Image 1 (cartoon, helix red, strand yellow):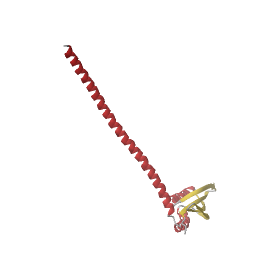
Image 2 (spheres, one colour):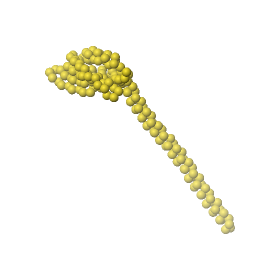
Image 3 (cartoon, helix red, strand yellow):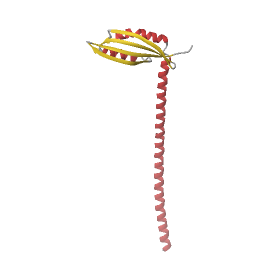
Image 4 (cartoon, one colour):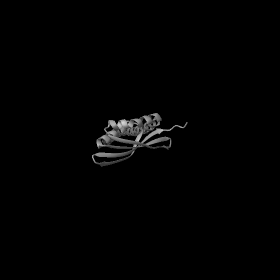
Length: 166
């Protein structure tokens, strides 16, 4: 009877150990699958960051390329259209003065000083038209003084273009 009790106890303990080990093995596999899934998600997040950096680099390259193809002819056409654009935006008095052309690296920058007399909404419309032109221009300086019934505005704009060596 001693041998039979020992055998039964051994078998019961072995089954308990085997069931415990099997349970832990199943949990290990489940955790391992979750870790693999999270690792895949982490890789997707890093890929997203890589794509975002590439998009930013492409946007900067696009902006620099658009500045490269702004020619002398388009600069003069744009400057010639400014009084008409001011008139369309409701500005009653406008004076424009070319303050010079300077080189900065491989860019040629034409600077204009524009003075206007009008109401604020008209000046805002004119600036909006300048922004919507999608040309490589920058409003470098803007001063506004309200006197009488008019807003006197003085702005300096810069027009960029790529200069080519002949």
